[in-house]
Length: 83
Image 1: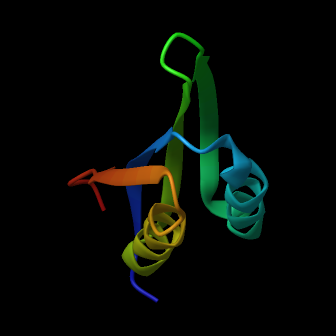
Image 2: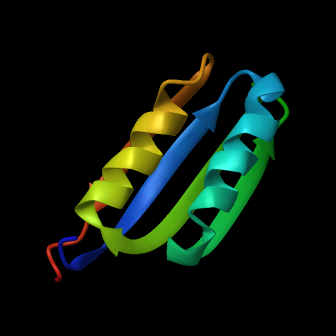
């Protein structure tokens, strides 16, 4: 595996029925998660989740991809230039 990178993964959850699947994926990669913040935005009917991860690029991309493929969930990643 490649060296670890610091990244922020941001999620917008429009379909709350995906919560269990999101939590399952995050549980599978919990050892890479440094911090997690979730905010329900009731006025819009969505939840926003921000994750700070310290992981190899392959893991960051896998987590983002798995979550982003869920119906009603958007996921984007910002990766630090620090190695």
